[in-house]
Image (tube, rainbow, N blue to C red; front, side):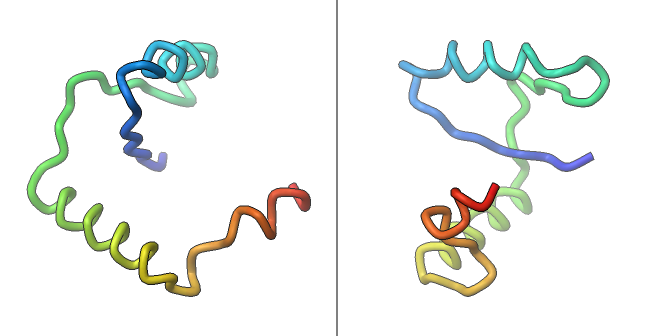
Length: 68
């Protein structure tokens, strides 16, 4: 399994959670209330910084959106 950390505004949280609840049981788990540890926070900050710096390994959604 892969882990996805998603930070959303309180206003859309119920809709995002509702979408996640529609996904098949056993293939996805909603881990409510779990906070990332220090290593995870550091990794997240590193990835965000790399994304903002325009590193090549991040796809440009506008370029690939129509190919999906």
